[in-house]
Image (cartoon, rainbow, N blue to C red; front, side, top):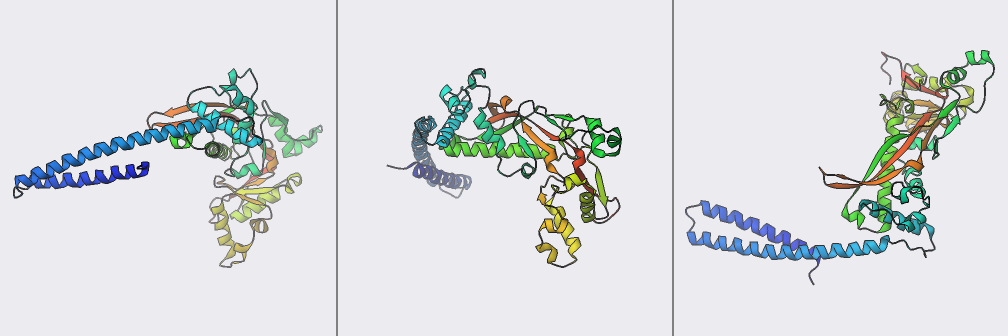
Length: 391
């Protein structure tokens, strides 16, 4: 029996043959020196090849449709949640795959699927409008190392989260007047309230992905959504010009966050000056976030042709652990436990979305999150003095 691959190759080969024969016919027809019998023979050849191409194309389409139906049946079997499986991870993977496929078909996920995913809250419109908690945890809480800031600051998933700005109170008015932390508490209040900022992340879905194995489908979807969320997180945290309503989320915001800047004649001086300017309370846990290209340029200027600094770890050079993030256009020095990312998982929605212009289907989540710099006094921005050549 001819395989689908062989049929596809036949279609391509006969198609090429037809193109060549048509080109010969066109040339012969336009050349008065070519006998009319030759032109007629070439025309018959074209008709013959077109008929063969039509037959083979029909065979290929029928075989392709049969295989697609076979894969569809197989996918449906794979998507079925087997509650007899001993491995709970396998059960969750199968349930997640069925959830994704149901969403892409515009159907509500079966109750058994929601139960397997831990979404047994009957108030959630039968589970149709909200992403189950376990899926939310998988998608939101564990990104694939695309936002390194998550390794430095706290990441939580609490609805209506409120936290004290610092873990101590200040009763002495003179202390409030003298200390930057005290002034910040007076200006911003002693409580940080996390809001709900909406973002939509879409994972493009092809038939190949949807008809693949449950494990591959879930892994692909989670990878795409995790990458999208991490990208959004970095965008708001390092925005030089934040969007309206997102000012408080950026380390670089000068209107609400107002992290102090410390300068130096070179980038090295600026960073070390910023480290030294931090209050003692933040020194032990202080870290540096900056771009790798800025660090490389700084080392090149400091080394003056010597290879010694290139071999040293960044922490040995700058005195504090360094994390490289391309979005950090101005180095940030500080205790990143005073910044926090929080997701409101209870409100996370999932749905199918289609870009009709491109003809692509997407599995989409609508997530609500907030990024707060709880205490600007715990950070410093390292800037180079204007007019200096060092960067």
